[in-house]
Image 1 (cartoon, rainbow, N blue to C red):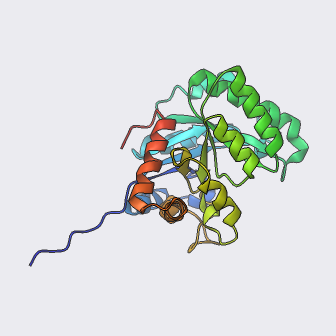
Image 2: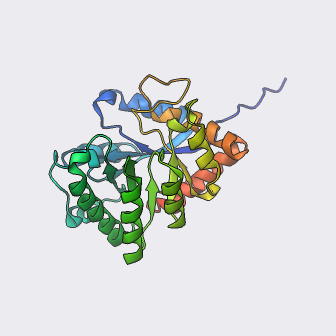
Image 3: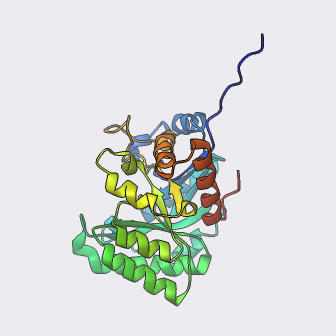
Length: 269
């Protein structure tokens, strides 16, 4: 009697997680192993504070399936030392450093540093332009300024970009897509009350969609309310497949190609 073939999960990439956060202390190896078992064969862990860069780099060096990005998170502006274009370019020399950021604007929690956030964002844009690495954007309650600054920078010198954990409105989505940028789908897209966001994704070109967890935050159902981790990318991918009317395998293949097109320094699968 011939055994039934085992169905392997499709390959997926978690394009944005934070494996250096205390939530994962002492568990990174197990978290990565669970990700691999779920088909998540690559992860990009994001450094949000300059002082954490050595630790984040060490994680990427220790795990073949892990890469990293470096920048100053907008909510850390004014709390952490500022970064310079030269600093970002210097860190970008590391072969496993694959993106600039996350950077951006957050007027919901940290509106008091809005001017400094805009200055920091422009520094990161310049570094993306000079290195050729993609910019990784955080946007919250700042859609108009975000669209203006991204467009202004792109007109000065083109660069590539992903709108990480996209949950803004249609105008910012359209502005980003018009510049050739990517929208990243997180667990928020799987929340029951996120139909408006799912509709925005459904109107975007399939070749501009990425997947992420933003773990340890924003776990999708059925894990909502608990710590998120890269393995749960698979749940968001199924929602994305449903949005685009595709099989999970076909949606996974599309997002894999998108990731490799944007994050050119990451080795292809």
